Picture (spheres, helix red, strand yellow):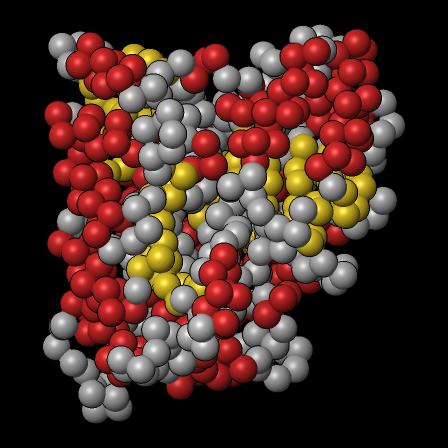
Length: 579
Ligand code: SF4
């Protein structure tokens, strides 16, 4: 592992562009992410923690939120907002045991809002955990051999891998590689153990702690990593800062194509910010994997913009400095020269639903979880169903990058029992849902996300009911089309890689984006702004009718709207805003 040094940190001020932003100073003074979090947890007067600690606690896998549904009522009663904490549980590659599933499910009931959110990065999220229960909850998560460290914050986050490691030996190998990269890029600070697990306290300044890869100020911004195995791009690998596309030759995993500089978020009204699809920069043999991953992190650590957080992601560093410089730095830092990228072919970004049989004869059942939200609603008891299955299941559960779950490693003997439970709780028959719904994603948004302008997860299901009517009228219910809805442009649900995207601008109003590819390698573009539901349906109806009548064989909707001139193709992040 490369050591960080003074020179690195002197060069950190925005890649030489101005002064450090205040978050950089906060990180540096935080004593490796301790801040005053431990003291804040003890304060019984408020359900909140200090503004600085709200930033630092992200590195520990938690966000402070407030329930906006009850804001006005609390105000009338002269109470502070109802604060609660989101806890994101890191699950590298998304694989959990049945026992872990039961434990997380019970924590959601005991300390959270009785729902489980499956995220688009193969993590669990608990919502609405009160401050007084935060430490207990994190301790219990760790007892189940999962953790929350680096699930958020300016570090490498949960490493994603293609959804089912049990599908084939190649899938298992890639999943193991994802775990190795995840372990290697995890921060080393003791702060997490001290604050949450009552580990031995390291008094500030007395014992010098080391963070060998990240240093005291960690990365300039969050950093996301994913693996994908063509032809399935179920991790949206090109939306990540760092991506690895498996190259299989003669039945063997020989290495990876490296992609760098993907990212989804932008800020409305600020065209210096934009989503970006990652560049494929070359191929390397498998043995170099960890060194390559570290080399990319070092590049961003040393050259990322630490003046302006809105331009701090690797995607901006790559556009500012260029790929040639990136390659030169990889040689300088790690002695690795990339080879020419190898051919690969993505055909879908969706999940497999229903039963499939793996190479080793075990069965896997892909369950569609609408909006990634597991809670028991009338008529659909998915949370209970998965809990009951976990009680008898001898295999594993896998969280997918599309907010779904795979009940994996089911024996031939156990298959009927599991099928009976799925039927009892009405979670069978995903194939009866429209392909649009099967390829939908929604972020959490209201009521808990403070950045949300509009609904997403709570609204998308009923909105899809309405589009389904249009699809039915035009015989398109079985045509795969991707749709994603988010409450703002922060990109948590990867909206800019959906063929139809709705991004919240104000309560009940959305920007409509069209023209992304179905395989996750081309961004969409703004079609119309600030539309109500009625207006969105009025815009989509003639487009879908035309698509049904004049689409070419196997042509996807995103490609069709470009071919027919409804919208221009976005060929690079830098022209996302060019209409
Ligand atoms: Fe919140 Fe925006 Fe992320 Fe949705 S995309 S969860 S509204 S920050």
